[in-house]
Amino acid sequence: MSHDPYARGAFKSNPYFSKKDISSGLVVILQGYFPDRNLELINPISRALLSGEIHEIILTDEDAGPGDTVNNIAYLGFVEIAEAGVAVVGDLVLVDEEEVGRLAGFDVTHMPNHLNIVVKTDLLKSGADRGFRLGQTLKFCTGGGE
Image 1 (spheres, rainbow, N blue to C red):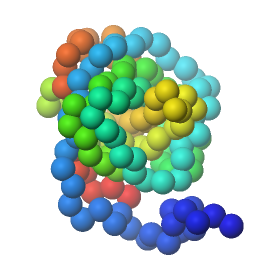
Image 2 (cartoon, rainbow, N blue to C red):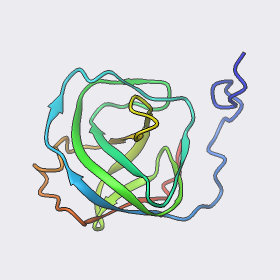
Image 3 (tube, rainbow, N blue to C red):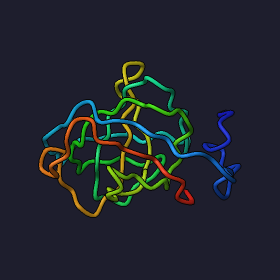
């Protein structure tokens, strides 16, 4: 039996009343697409992101959330967390104030090396094809969640 309150369905709404934005900087810009990536989003709707950690940002145009599998993806890049905080499904993701999408969930394939942070977007283009540059700011901003 799972003790995870999300897996048990204990939360019927997002319990995060108020939280600060997370700031990070792009340290790698990626190119590439996969129609069959098979990312398995974990059940928890949130992850703590600590200062100095490096995580991968992956985009999808699929309507997916915690517990779902994501296949159609584009790679955006890797970020270094500058200001720690808690990222929650539904958070708005911005690069230099340009809306990229909303946080869909987390995949732990490469842990403990890095977390895959999956973002639902309407524009499925890689970081390279979007013209993103090293050093640009990527933020996770409160967005209401699920």
